[in-house]
Length: 414
Image 1 (cartoon, helix red, strand yellow):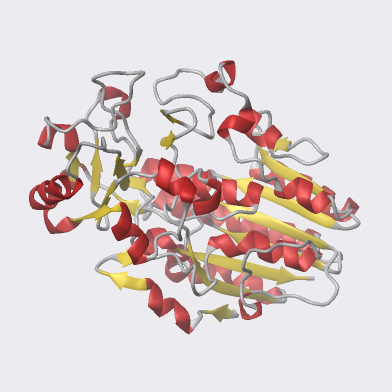
Image 2 (cartoon, one colour):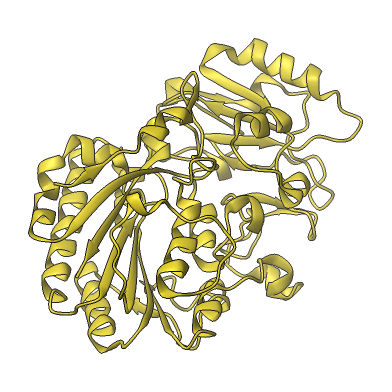
């Protein structure tokens, strides 16, 4: 197999159990969509991947981006024999980093907008939204306490909630076609329809159906971009743990379907297939989890005017954020957290995070991000203790460990 690891990635190992996004090296997920635009001849001011990181040719008519949620670099290292079918094709596997936070919310929005997370501002499953002045769930367009999706649309226009940049419309402005193919549960959502181009998202029930629909789009397309999303590896890994037999079976099944798909489009020249991931996961355990409201009952945890006296989640157990009042002594709170949590947790101020290179200068992050981040070392979690937000998943992501941050980019050129 043609596996390429850029030597500059060593620079991302910046602290104890911290892998920073490779923004400076142009080796992060944030560089994928600008690269797609470059290949298709679409103007884009954002930085692209170095040409050494993907296969290309002077004539590419179709770019297919297959986004496999939680398709971590870790799997390639552990189960490398399962990837041997790639030797039948002109391929390359490159090592990239996730963005921070290492979440699907951040990365799927980067695909749809073409922007890095620190520009589009949708960074977490539960996040503070400055224009609404609430903690919301942007993918679902609701609040963490809501029992149905899209309740925010009762009060706000969708473009007040989500960034307005749309990569599908941008590509179509150059006379190219676009298509998104996503699971049935996602296809009708307001989020996916907001970011579609001329064509509605295509839904699918099973991976075999999804890849068959993808094949049909590819063979009937003259020139353009197709996006395919699959969440199965992420779902199973959350439920059973990243190193479980169930996760391995799901990975093996996904790779078989990928192999089968590639074999069915091999007679479509000038087609580039890119297979990527948003993040990996790390196994978590009850014995390595702390509940902040139990440890610090006097600290108000992300309390907002709508729910006075109620502690609220901001981020995930692997990247938990605190938004503080202007009158709070940030340094004193950080010192207390560090003293109580010990060496298994990184407690970082906003400036600490920026200094580490976790994101670039960002006006939208200044308004929305946490003032303090609590990031566990591998396997450690911090959250709030309530029945509604109890940790039930056996592997999680969002943090900065190597398992969460390193991702592959597979390019196959026909």
